Image 1 (cartoon, rainbow, N blue to C red):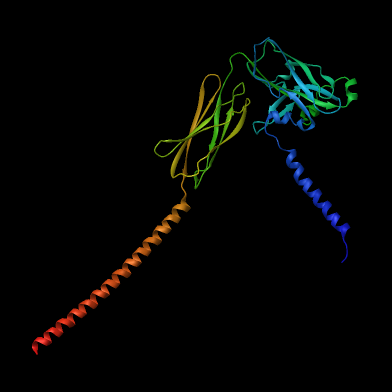
Image 2 (cartoon, one colour):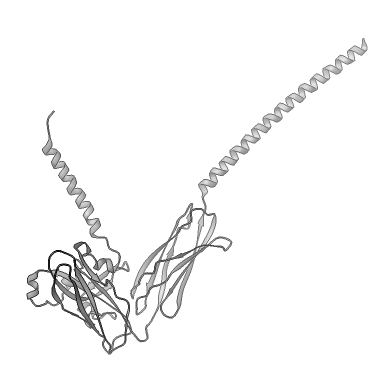
Length: 351
């Protein structure tokens, strides 16, 4: 037997390369929330505290001061460059896309130009929890409503600390990775417009078994982000409440649409069901509502039961007919015997 080890290793190497190319992109594109986008450096042992601020309420002309922290969990010192960027929300309603100050200037929710972070560059030693001072200077003519920005920390070469910070450009602003930082939500007091719409509410029109999946999209046309506390009430054909589904509240940024999902954890059911979606939002107690009807009917089980019943009915009919036939045959035999007996009796009398 000949040994073909070189050929075997070439085939094995090709398989490893193929699997790597197939798997690596899957992990490279996974992202869901702004906090997860900015937290992509967690695997490199950096953390930002907090990943997102609570809503900071201010008035035009106010000055607001706070601080954020950055922890280096590596075993060596890291040079960190810190900058503030505006962002817009992608079409998926949850992914932040950094933009330059020039691009953000016409956007009513721009915030980065109001924020000053100190220091902008520093070396962070191993296991150090570095503190950054943040000052938000609200312009006197600031538009009421929500304003949003991200303070991001980027590892750089130690030699970069000796250089002057470069101006933000489109290339640096658009590079989300590798960045780690804090999202700032600021709400300026005033006449804030709040308006939202339910753009879709979808569920299977007919299902055989549960669970039943719901999906709905809410568009926010407000001047500030909203966090609807949505719920879906499901009732059966006679109006009884089957379940009340509370949907996880998620932020919807201004002029963006976000899709939510929910599930009715019910396996069995027969007949039409009505699902009523309620989406309360804003500070004025506004509520959006819509309904849909879906059917739940286990037709295969019903058909199986019908087939079994029909089979049993057929068996009963066949057995009954067989018994009736046997009864008729015996009755005829008895009648014949009776006729013969009467005939014999008649002959005996005549003799």
